[in-house]
Image (cartoon, rainbow over all chains, first blue to last red; front, side, top):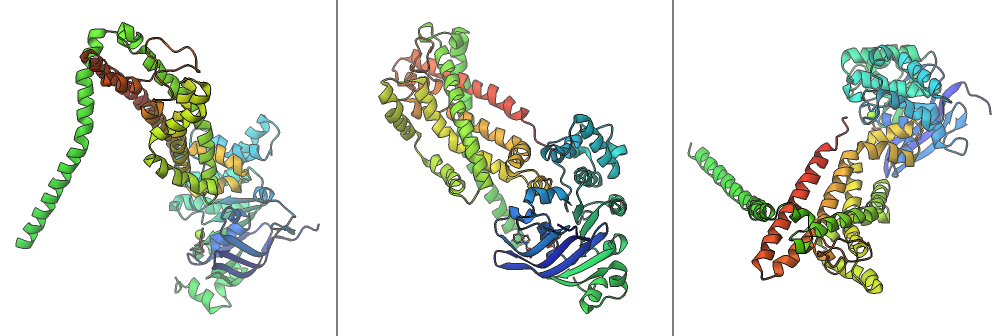
Length: 256
Length: 277
Ligand SMILES: Nc1ncnc2c1ncn2[C@@H]1O[C@H](COP(=O)(O)OP(=O)(O)O)[C@@H](O)[C@H]1O
Ligand SMILES: [Mg+2]
């Protein structure tokens, strides 16, 4: 099996909720170790497409996915990989920060590691948790209260805890679905800086409905409108010389 | 201004009628509690501690208190594990047969005369065993308990935002572990409150015990396969007697039942902590 130069390759992807055709024949190639932004107005299908990359759509019985998604050259929907393996390699950060409220800060990160047997000893677990929290820029703020519940953290801190929870698993891809949509500006800035830092080691797929954010942090960007891919390419190029009139309208705020 | 005043008059009279109706609804409840206290306290005071510890011959209701505890305990032991599993299953597969059935079940059981459950248990346990027994009584209560526990469990888990489920799955946690390690613990308060309400409900039941538990008040029960008493059942028996002394005792027993509820259930309910989001 050859390792692809692309982290994710999407071919002729179609997604339906019942009879509602939400993602329409999308082709997309996401290069490794870059920040790839997916932007588009609310309701255009960004979250749905993202959830097809880690088979999270499997949770919804009414969803149908056609076409193929390859993760580093391996098809995630046919026998190549099972869904648990896919989810281990493709971490996900959600629009609303969702640390588990009944688990301590420490155990929020430990859970995935233990469930997937990714560490061999308690010492390794401690080390991995500290490492992940440092990577997520949260260590200094929580090191003295690892056993506290996340309810005491601010929105931005919770989102960084969720990012630490993902990083700890050492996934190959980190997907973020509008990670700053519910965070104050200072917290958002920290998360954007963090995304910049993380792309050295990970491929990041960032969904946003905010073109300015895509311009700030991404290397590549895809513009989706009503379930169709309008255009995709290097961020600099798309923002300075978009090929499609629709993209231009969106970027100038004339499309809602 | 005329218009305005008419509207206010309508509003106020509407409010008045609603208040009056609420009063008539709540009044019986307070009246019951008040009467039970006033009439029960006399018996309790004049009889002393023997009322709690003694047998009927001593002028006490000890065997009935123990019987209620035994029946509730074994009904819970039989009913809760099964019902919890059914509730979890119904949450996990809401469109399955069991999923739809549990939801339909509560509506049915709320209407369902509990005495019929007693009859059913008589058929399958009491007649074959040839005697009333604690087991038969507990079994009847368990049958009444189960739909409540199942539905409360399912409802409590359904309240938990889908996002936690997604988060667990996205971390490679399996379906079964997601339910037991994530969803159920977050829904802990709802589930435990449901358990308490369900147990409280069956602890106060009389009808299903009439011809299953039978009753035993002269001595303490010493075997699960022998008849056993219960406070509600004893009250029912005492009130039927023409003797004023028995009526006084029924009031005392009622007060004890009320106190058990207040003493056991209020602190328990308050001690169940909400998981802070
Ligand atoms: N669970 C669901 N069931 C049915 N339809 C859904 C569901 N989630 C999203 N949709 C529909 O799919 C379309 C795309 O939604 P979504 O992917 O959430 O868009 P975005 O993330 O770009 O705002 C919308 O029309 C939405 O109504
Ligand atoms: Mg979305």
